[in-house]
Image 1 (spheres, one colour):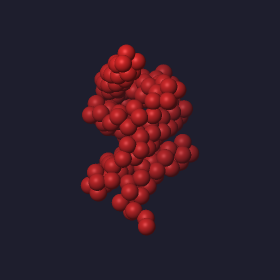
Image 2 (cartoon, rainbow, N blue to C red):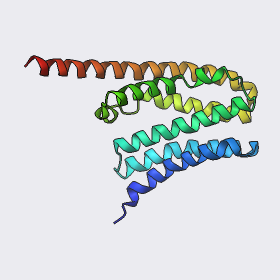
Image 3 (cartoon, rainbow, N blue to C red):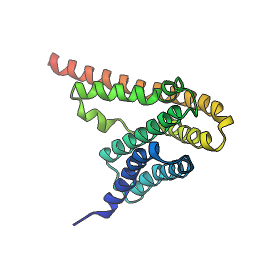
Length: 184
């Protein structure tokens, strides 16, 4: 029997992947509606999963990857269409870069359980909201884009630092636990 309460939040998240694929090819008139629908979907998927008590660590990772795919696609499209300079991209995506490097490290060490222990963080949620605000500002009020860039860079730095500290703390705890097993 299908569990619709599990399927619907994941389908909403999956739609964001679809929007990521469509966005670079969409007419500029469609940019704002796609951004707004994606922003709403980012809120709705988690809200539904929490409301229906169907949250899973896999759903959390799926949501985070969908956010990053959409963000990267939108900002790359803006840079390629000269809505802002290319050098903005590493600044805007610093949090995504840190998280990707941590994920690659953990995967290379086969620390799969760490993915379950790394919940979304408040700083990351605020940084994602700021990214959506920048994405909205670019087509709506381009003259304000540089101000939103500063906001995204600041909040992204805080979120990247926060994720890095959580990662380091978890790594130290894992190393201490391993040392304790070896000394026995």
